[in-house]
Structures are given as C-alpha cells and as structure tokens.
Length: 259
Image (cartoon, rainbow, N blue to C red; front, side):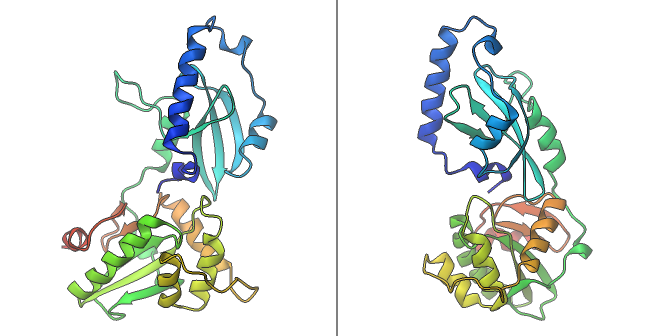
C-alpha cells in the first residue's frame, strides 16, 4: 500500500458519490471557482488531522477539487479534497492527453518513486528472521502487521522459505498510519522476537498490549529508513541486488525475482 493508501478508509462508493456531486456543481458553476468555494490552511489541517500534517492547500488542476500537500512519517504526499469538504481522494491526477501526472502529484511522484537502493544500507537488526538464518541469499520484506496484503504475502514467504533452503528472509516492521494499532503491534512483536505473535496478528487474533518495555526506536528507525529510500507501501520486497518490489507476489513469483 502506497503513501496514498493512508486514505484507503475512504471507500470507492464515496469516490463515486463525490464524482456525481462534482458533476452537478460543474453544471452550475460560473467558472470562477474561488468566488464560491474557499478553504484555509487551518481548516484543511482540522479536516485532515488524522491523516498527516497539512503543509499547503490550493485549487487543484481539476475543477471541483482542492490539492492538499501533507507530511506523514517523514514523507510528503498529495491528496485531493472535494469542494463540499466531505471526500478525500488519494493518488495522482493524470492528464489524458500526455498521460503524465499534473499538479503536486507530479512533483511527489518524482520525489518518491524509487526502484533501487544500496543493499549495503540494509541491516538484519530490528527484524524477524524467516527461513535459513545463515542463508547466502538475503531478502528483506517491509511489512505491516495489520495489512491484509502482508498477511497473504506472509503465507507465500513461508512457502518461499521451503523452496529456497539457502535464503534468509528479514522481516522489517513498517506500520502504516492508516492502521492505528499497527505501530504498537509492531513494537510488541519485535520486542518479543516472535513469529508466533506476527502470525496471530495476521490471523486477526489479539496481542499483548504494548508497554514501556516494547522499544519504539527500532520501529521508528525502520520507518525513517523506508521514507528515505522511497519505500511507502506494504508489503515491499528488497531483493539482494537492492531492487525494490512493492506489492503482493506469490512464492513462485518471488522465487523468480531472486534468480
């Protein structure tokens, strides 16, 4: 899930509702949108306080929307708020003719899109180990204990570990803000170094509550590393040569990538 997916709690139905609302407004709009619709930075900050820190808000390249720039976990994102201030849309806005992002979404895409990192910067610290702890091949996985796609990927990773006896899989915890319980769950799982607790989390079972003994720094360090290296979704694989591969993949697909 990408940075935009911090907004994924807003459903497709809401987006459809918004699009109908925006169409209706366009039928009666004089063309000078600012004469009827306005929003302040303070108001946008209040509306989106649970998503991130709002840095800027302005009319979007598309009529009927405000473009909101915000920060979350050290990353910069752009989202779009409708003039009714009831719906938020995550993702990039594309010009149909050029097929290119427009507005702030283009700048954020350039800033964040990375497909490779220096594998020497990856360390096995602050990770659970799956597979052969002394394997010659190293695979890093950035996961969120509340991410349903990560739960599916975890099943495939176990299959991959059986297929590749010389593979070490390091599981790094990258809790997304859209999952408010994921941060504390990550702390608990990592501090106990427990694959069993990770399995329970993916199965939707309760975990022990986080305490002061469950260190925040290892999780915070992973969040910062991910942000600095263009990793903004879960699950994300980092292959031995440093290639970044976001998204769910089957065991066979991951095995092919390792070749």
